[in-house]
Image (cartoon, rainbow, N blue to C red; front, top):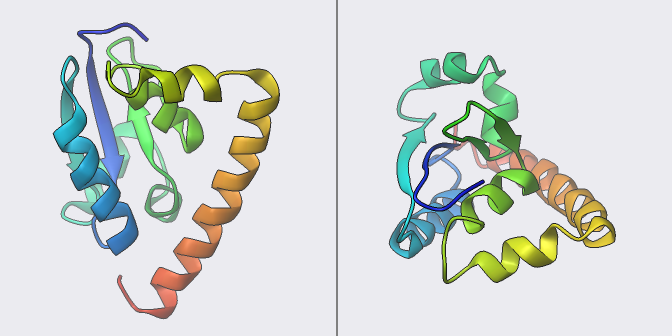
Length: 123
């Protein structure tokens, strides 16, 4: 992804952990025009990316200005890759072994967080 881009970030504000992370991230974005799409406020937004509501509640989704879809850790890499102050994170996570391990950790954490949110009846 290139700097000065336009991306769409699909996130779940009903998850307090996710929402806190997104709120912090909104303040860090300097070069990238972002549409923040809260699927909790409007469940129909998942239709824009042809995704299941449960899956978008569980994992962050990003669409870049070329229409490429990034999910989970790759969505974070897409966001951080367009933030000059956080580009270093994206560069580290792009390394093959780190990326593989990072995806595994992200997916396990996302699944556990989803179950916790369900138990807490956040949706």
